[in-house]
Amino acid sequence: MSAWTEVDRKYLLDNLIRSKQEIIEETKNLTKEQWTFKESPDRWNINQIVEHIALWEILFIHEISRALAMEPNSTFPYAPDSVFLDQDPKGLKHNNAMDYTKPFSFAIPLGNNEGKNNVIWLTTMRNESIDYLKKETKNIKLQYDYCSGSNVHQYYIMIFSHTDSIYAR
Image (cartoon, rainbow, N blue to C red; front, top):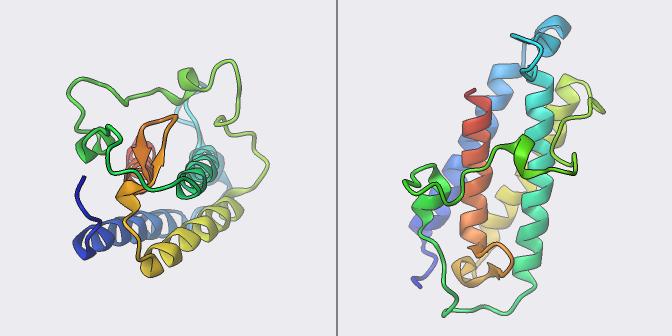
C-alpha cells in the first residue's frame, strides 16, 4: 500500500470543497416551491436529495471514525481507488440507495429539515472533514474499516463521489 501523499490530500480537499460549493451555489436562491418540486411522484425533490446526502455523510463519517480507531494495517487487501470513483467496470461497489438500505430506511429522506437547514447540516459536517484532512499527518490509506474493506482515503472519495452522483441526477 502506498503512502498518503500531499497530492492525495489536495485531491480529497479539492473535491470535498468543490462538491460542497456546488451544492451551496445550486441551492442558495431556491424558493420553497423549487425545494419541494418533484419531476414525478417516484423522484425525490431537491430538499430530499440534500437530506439524503447529509444522512450518508453521517454514515460515512461514522465509518471513518471507526477506521481511525483501528491500528494501521499495510497488508489488508483493498480495492483500487477507481472502484470508489464510479469507474468500477465490474460493478463491485454500485448500490441503489433504496435497495441497499432495505429493510431499514436510514438513508431515505424523512423531511425532518427544510431546504437551507439541510445545506447547513451537510456543510457543517463537510467542514469538519475538510478541517480534519488539512491537519492529518498519518497515512490514512492504512486506516481500514474491516467490514467494508475501505480505507479512510477511499471513504472521502465516496463522500464527494456520492455527492456528485446523487446531485447530478
